[in-house]
Amino acid sequence: MPGNATFRHSNTSILSVTGLPAPEVRTSAEFDERIMDTLRRNRLVPGVLSRLVGVKERRWWPQDVHFTEAAAEAGRRAMVDAGIRPEQVGLMVNTSVSRDHLEPSTAVRVHDALGMPRSAMNFDVTNACLGFVNGMQIAAAMIDSGQIEYALVVNAETSRATQERTLARLEREDATADDVLQQLATLTLGSGAAAMVLGRTDQHPEGHRFVGGVSRAATEHHELCVGDFDRMTTDSVALQDAGIALSEALWADAREEFDWQDMDRYVIHQVSTVHTEQVCDRLGLDGAKVPRTFPRFGNLGPAAVPFTLAMEAPQLERGDRLLLMGIGSGLNACCAEIEW
Image 1 (cartoon, rainbow, N blue to C red):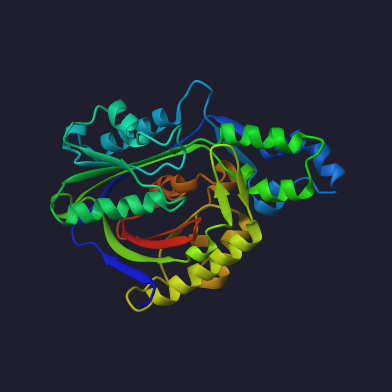
Image 2 (cartoon, rainbow, N blue to C red):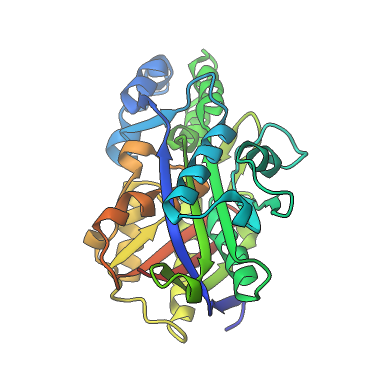
């Protein structure tokens, strides 16, 4: 399987997953109104975010709430739901793209806020929107090896500052049509948090088994979406085409090891209506089995997959087979199977 990595887990289950939406709603209609003069001056049609992309709303954290507080709260709820205490956790992985500085890690702030024990390893794993799934992989490998008994994977994203700066740039009289198109993806982002507790299957028969999965890279596309503390520029069409092609290649390779054609749910990364429909069409998936959170919450980055899983969890039944389908700018992709 050239260029591909297949993994299976022997003794890891998901014990809980939580999603925490930010409270302040910002509609796409509000964003359109902010940049209406620019849209009209450049003969661009308003409503692209809601009609074509499908993002009608996204959320922001209040000014006085730091995103790491949200990550900690999501983690706290996940531990309560799993019935474990902080001192039992051997690993805490933060997978947030959002950060205030380059060092120390964002994980240390969440670790401190949760009152985790000194024995609990903690670090950041960043891989664009694929980070949370990668964090699950690392945690499962350590649980399978017997190095730890419990792992907590957390994520919180904040889009407020980046979107405020983007809107301010696009409001300027010299803003061009290219400026709007290159930064449109930034306006689809949302703010939210998610967390997951993983533990040993042989100690938790009530858990949801983490079966394994397949990952694949296409790093020749690393310049299609580039973001820093101030702005994100995206070639949306090229990124989507490359992402779909990568997903198809992964899907074809995965057939050698997994049967994923008739899962009970496909929890895919939440980007847009067009992206979701293309994934379903190109991979032959039943769109009715794909829960969607992006219309109300936007693209939550690495939090999107676990957040969507948490929202869907009340409708799941014991024995359901789920496929987490993540893709991150760069490009990297991963599908991971869970037996609920």
